[in-house]
Length: 387
Image 1 (cartoon, rainbow, N blue to C red):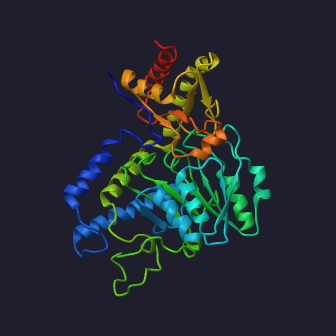
Image 2: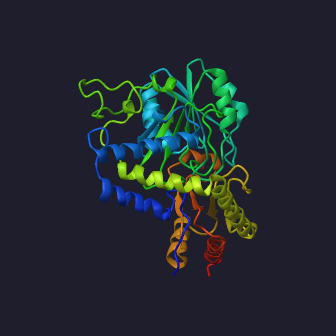
Image 3: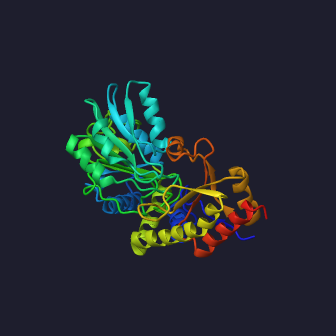
């Protein structure tokens, strides 16, 4: 049975061959740490990290490559940003489509005196921009927003939100987990103060590497979440004041950065627009194949019915069949790998009307084909009809 991977919103697979080669080459051929050794291999490793920072800064139109901070993933990045910035008495605006990578830190901070208000979204996940002015409070300090829903793929409008933040003197933090490497992100044009990313999704790197890009003005306001050895200013026990060292204590995931750099090289050569167009074409085709099933009342498509302002994510509910059972049968009988459940985003499901059952999520990537989309639709039809 041929296996068809349709869970790219969780992590892209496969990666470009160059990614695995770069990770292996680092482990077997270089292997050392940076900021510690005074020898050629250590400087070579440092140069690799520096070049990767430059590539990410260029990709996001960030202020400077030193402002690119590496972490394990976007979740750690958001924790560093939110917990480093917010103090008791602060108020935050966020959306009703957020992932728990945003919501759990905010709920944790709420217990310490930080408050937040959700900007409402429509039943298709679209942000209701006109409500934001009325949600402001005198103590509102920041807006934290996902760029696209991991549940239904709807893209939220960063540029007008960034302009709103700039107008009202608010910090703007963006969770780009679902869009980095797939959609254009311009920190300058979108007035973004900090952009959190993960390496293992659209950037096509391995798991365990992520980061954020931050403006100097915001970095100066943040208290580091972690502290320890950096290999710099080792004569003092105080945390370094300069970037990136202030937010990068301990041993970095250098094999992961090497793999991420290879993924970025692949993206530069292929083109984000090319990747985006491919995923949009597959998504549109898949939605067309699902329309008859929805007309029969066998499924409910969640979110938008077109590919405008959305990623390659399609979620649905089966009406007469338990969704976990349907997802199991898709895999066990037809080799279609999906994700089922709440996708770590309960508030998004409440907004979309799919809580508590959740959805079956199909998410397309670069290596998927029209044949994959057709096979998934045909398998779903067979399961729904009990064939």
